[in-house]
Image 1 (tube, rainbow, N blue to C red):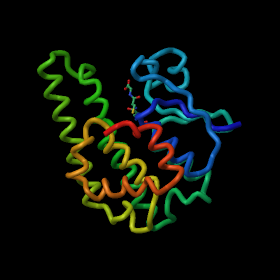
Image 2: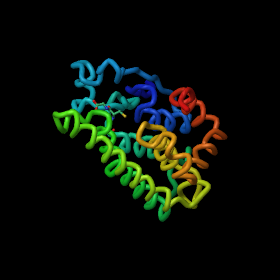
Image 3: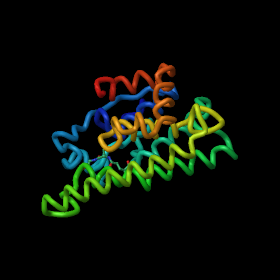
Image 4: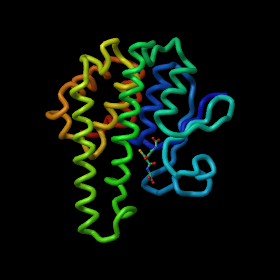
Length: 208
Ligand SMILES: N[C@@H](CCC(=O)N[C@@H](CS)C(=O)NCC(=O)O)C(=O)O
């Protein structure tokens, strides 16, 4: 049985699909439309009770959720793909994956759905802007730690895929090109990786 990835284009599913493609693993992509709020429908809540994308069904049929857990699972299941460096460099990979998962990704919910946190329009607009600024400030820390040309001195890893994704979302798009130049240059370099680029084009190819 192949992996089944539940996600939407331009969502966190991008990073998981890119990891699967880089690993050369067979997978099916099952679209759950964020525009239609399908992530909150009972059929999907039975897969991921938190009502968030992505979720991954492993070839065994077991379901795993949480983007960073999916990335680490794919790296462990496909060691030959070299998606993460061995220790001691792996420690830095884990550090920055965890940083973006815990410090950056939760801000995206506030930006996308501020009305879940405050009820009046003025507070929602302010909250959204402040959360966007937190995303940017935290991605600047990733930029500062960037070895170049990839995030880690050891070379390409899942950290690059994950970091590139955050720069394409509304909080950073456009702003990242001038303010995160090392991550922007790495994103351009991703285009030279056939598998990652194929998935990148599918998700973000039409975004400027
Ligand atoms: N902690 C989750 C967060 C996932 C997340 O926020 N996904 C977004 C799409 S990129 C989502 O499903 N948003 C819909 C919603 O919050 O209703 C993870 O790391 O996978």
